[in-house]
Image 1: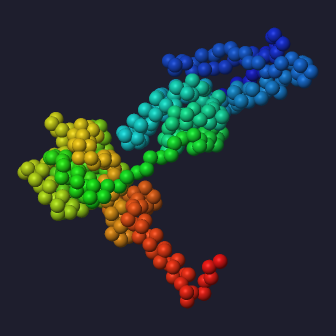
Image 2: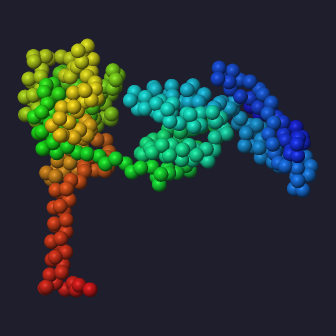
Length: 383
């Protein structure tokens, strides 16, 4: 719909102003047309007459898209209005519950208070940079800042797809202020010695649950959703994942690959089964998926602390398995298959950690090569 306005230019208290009309979406969803007045410039030799400030008026109207043939009333919505009416409901249907819940939390607690009042079409790259700079002052880590930038970028991408905005995404040129953000927390991989000590101090069912993580490398949601029907032919068949009572498909198609069970774990699971053939392997008293985070916080972590054993979370067992396989000479593709990763690079970059023993062996081999190069019968000369 084309809206052609020239506005009314007038003087007021030593400055040039333009008065015009603009449609806005109210919180109730109602569209209201209101009058605005914006200061263009001071009255000075460069701006003596109405004619001289008309280019400034045209520039303002172009920015506000008042006379654009592709003008859309949705562009007058604030980020808060658009996020709650369009973006958040959409991701709830497209993303896993854990992911959409995290996006919603980050928007409401971190981002919305800083920029939710800005209208979609008024938001500029400098506004996005201001938001990221302000968030960096809260000692948020670089990875968290990247996720928050991605969240804002996703909102504007959705607005562009729905026709509420034209042009480029204003978050595209925003930079992560890494110089202010603290360095990422180093990840941890449990060793076999760590696991042995944990199993020694824990009781049941915590011991069997921990062994399932340690000896299979399964994800937390996969363990929570595991059923006795999924255990057959010497393997656990990953059919679903659980998060806060929500059952979903596994993370990726490759995640559905069977997980082989080693003999010690099979014995522990058989003892835990107690004759059951159906139902959740690890459940609460109500028959719902067991909250593994609550179990770790209330039972496992206190017992480990009494034994002077550090707790690094459930995912450290998955990294530990990948790291041990690498130390044992297993090829990278096989490790990827064991962890059921869709991407080969994720396995190498995020799960196979360098441990002191392997680093020491690598440096010993390097030292031997250097010593050979500078041996007396070598043609290499030391300068």
